[in-house]
Length: 182
Image (cartoon, rainbow, N blue to C red; front, side, top):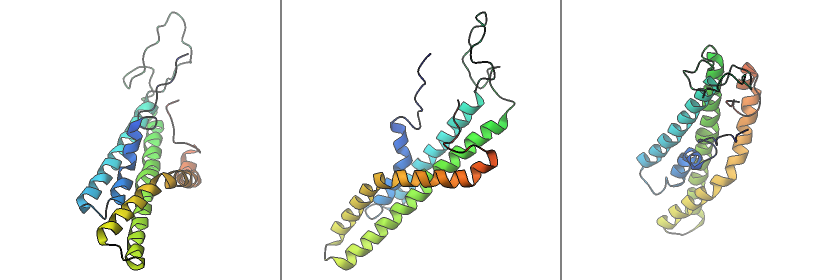
């Protein structure tokens, strides 16, 4: 029994690329708007790469029994392997769509909107409630946005799980986490 390989997009530093747009939104008061849009490009690239990865993993799930006969050497599973499931495009499609929709909502759209509104509100409030110079208000807003990122992740993830389980996942009957390659 070997240990399972860590998921590049969920178990390594690459996961933090999904938070690029929240960082971009936090810095919106300080940087040109194209920099913020570039942060959305990084996050969207992460979401797309993760969805493609989950589709590839779904395509390479073994169709054979878990323990092959001793006379048959175990072949590594690849998309071109005869042990793969090329005849099951539904499994691949579900993995790609579920991952893409979940990541788009939980990593890009909802957190980006949340940090954007938090930063806009804090900048406006600091402008009306304090006499701080504009650069201080902008840096304070950025610090608040950055500080909020770790606080919003889990509630947003759980909310998206609930929304997906209550809607899209009912269509393909796989509640819980996005499909994995197991």
